Length: 124
Image (cartoon, rainbow, N blue to C red):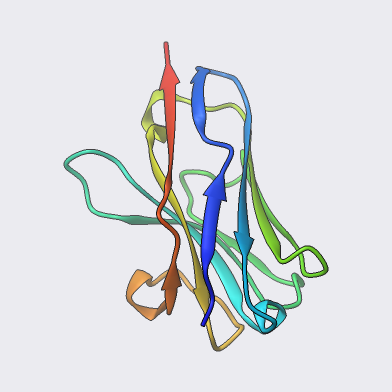
């Protein structure tokens, strides 16, 4: 069992930055791949980024590549999403998720545990 709690969301102006954190409980955090997804009003949940259990490989959606960075600290049971050059289209609820194979991927239905989400709102 892994419990995930996101934090760091908020209101930011376009062009600004935010760093999201996802704190995990459970001694097996280091064996899970972690992903970030987001869901905007009226839209389906979409993949943002993922990182393997070791942190050695990362994956990004094309829409955030070069602007967002996913990282993890297994000693702190935490995964981060650094977001830069935010634009209006980044407004959404952001969710972190844990995936038991440790390899990570972009399919939401393949993740085993989810957090409650944190709101990110980008204003013009």
